[in-house]
Image (cartoon, rainbow, N blue to C red; front, side, top):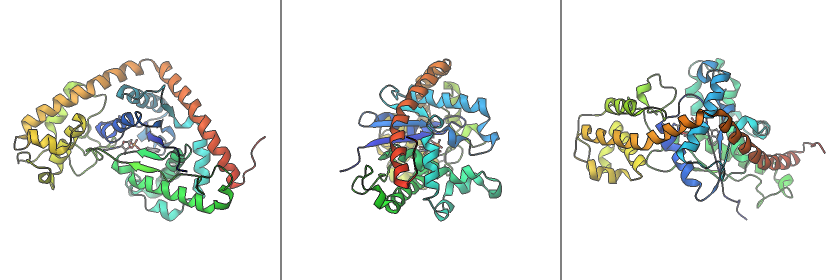
Length: 350
Ligand code: TYM
């Protein structure tokens, strides 16, 4: 019998959410709620894996956690139908991560490119949590035995690791698994990444070869979900381009990373393909395309920014949503932890 389809994904509450987070992940979160039961998690435990200077300290963490929650809801996620909560409220994430720490192999983690990028040259000084980050991510997903995980392109490698961990757990504990909610001998599903749409990797507005990121020193490299209309207009107009007119066909975007990125953003925001966008703008200059892009960004993003502002002004309401979501998440998580502990051989309290 196949696993019941369930969607899980997470977003870190570090710094401002940007257009990459929105188009690469949140837009797909919103779509998937029409067809699936979804769990959307603000991963505050992942947020503290880097230095205090990156996550900003306790007050900033709580503020950012509420802001990401507000962004989910303002973008159209319905917290009554789907589960929205922050990771640290459900202790199963940490507990399952420990079991997975003993399943995952150093060699697997040593290959993770995100750790290498984030740790930089000073690896000795990176936290153990940053190194272990992908194991916690596998625990996030598998705690709910989720089958589908909508993410941007940059999380693909982490998803592959989650599959490897699920598979090794299923193999290692094969005998014990039978009789403990096994599904054709599998206790954990192998979660599938959903990396879809024309903007799975939104690039920096200043350099089309670099990912749009919260950590880029230049705020002009990204459009934040909270930017006002004037800021958006300025950033789009300043965005790097090349001297050629826009190509007529998608093939013409090859080797033109900045043009490709802006067309991809336009396509994703308007719900069309890049080819369709080029049918309207191909052959034209960037200046008129950028005017249309500004208008599109402002039309799509301003209502979200407005709603986020309204929501964060009432932290009590957001906390109630997170608490309610955590209660529902915990009910599922507790069942997985109970079975996982039995499978491993941990004696549980009566
Ligand atoms: P995070 O918080 O860095 O990013 C949240 C989501 O946004 C996507 N994303 C992008 N998509 C397209 N273009 C970009 N420039 C861009 N930048 C970010 C990310 O791919 C992600 O989907 N490790 C995760 C959080 C996480 C998680 C999980 C995700 C923790 N546990 C379990 C899925 C399942 C992260 O750091 O995302």
